[in-house]
Image 1 (tube, rainbow, N blue to C red):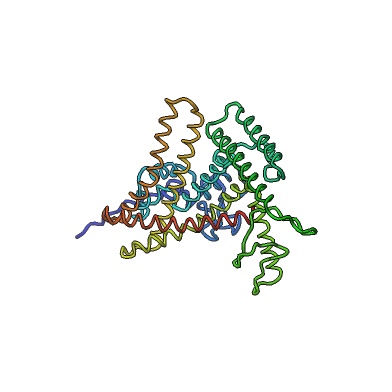
Image 2: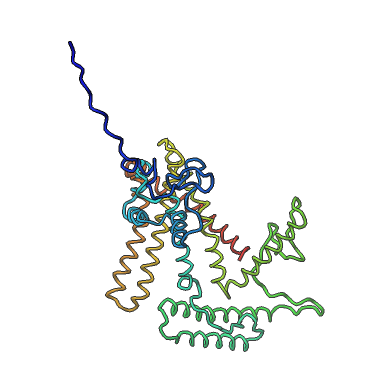
Length: 406
C-alpha cells in the first residue's frame, strides 16, 4: 500500500525588477513607462519596435549633434587611427581584412577615401603659395611688349629688372623664391632681345597702305579645325545641330577661356586654384576606371568588380595620405630653414616617402592578388602606364574645365 507523499508548495515568483529582463518587462515602481512619441508603443531601446523611429532627435545638445554628424560623414572615432596606421605601413592589409569579413575594427573604404581626399585637397590648396609659379606677387611694371622703339624697349627692360632686384632684397626670402625671381630677370632680358628683333624685322617690311587697319597685338588664340583663328565676332564656332543659344553659349565660353589664357602670366594662382577645384571630381571619376583596369589585368582571377573597386579605394586613399605626409615634411623643412642637422634628415624622409609611395602600391598588388613577383611586376608596370595615360587625358580635360569655369 503506497503512502501519500505531500509535495512542498512551489516557491513564490520573483518580483519583476529581479528578473533578467526586468527592464524590458516591467518598470520600477517609481519610474514612468517610456513610450514612443510617434505611435505610443512602449519604448524598449534607441529605436521603436513598432514604427522604427529613432529616440534621438535634433532637439538636444549641439555637441551630441556634431558628434553624430562627424560619425556619419567621417566615421571619426578610434577606428580612424587604427585604419590610418594599417593603411600607411601595411600594404594591402586593410583590403585583405575587409575581403575576409573582418570589418568592424576599421573605417569603411569609401569613408576613408573621402576623409583623406578632403584633407589632402585642402592641404594642397593651402600650400599653393609655396608651389605656384609666381610664389610672391610684386607690382612689376612690365611694358616690354608694348614698347614701340628700341629706346622704349631698353627702358622697359631696365625698369622691370630693377623692380625684380628690389624684390630680391626682401628679408627672409626663401631660396626657392630667389631662384624664381632670378629666372624672371633672365626672362625679362630675353624678351627685350626678342622685342628688339621684332622691331628690326618690322622696320624692314614695306610700309602699310594709307587707311589700312592697324595690326592687332598677337595673343593666345584658339584655332579651329580649319586652321583659322577663332574670333567671337568675325569667325565664331557654329555647330549646325546645336541651337543658336547653345552656339552663343559655346562662343562665350571660348572667349572666357581665351581671356584666362591671356591672363595666365599675370595671375597663375587663380587658374591653378581653379584647376585644384575640379581635380577631386576628376579623380573620383577615374577611380572606377582604375578598378576596370584591375579587372582586365586580373581577369582570370575570377574576382568580383567590387573587390577591384575596394583595391582602388584603398590605393587612392594611400596616395592621398602620402601627399599629406610629403606636404607635412615639406612644411617642416621650410621651418627648419638653414639648420642642416634638421633639414637633411627631413630631406631623407621626404625621399623615402616618395619611394614608399611607389613601392607600397607594388607590394599591395602582390599581397592582394597573390601572384608571383615577376608577373606582379609586369602587371604593375602595365597598369601604371595605362593609368598614367588615362590620368594625363583626365588632367588635360580638367584643365580645360578650369579655363572655362574659373
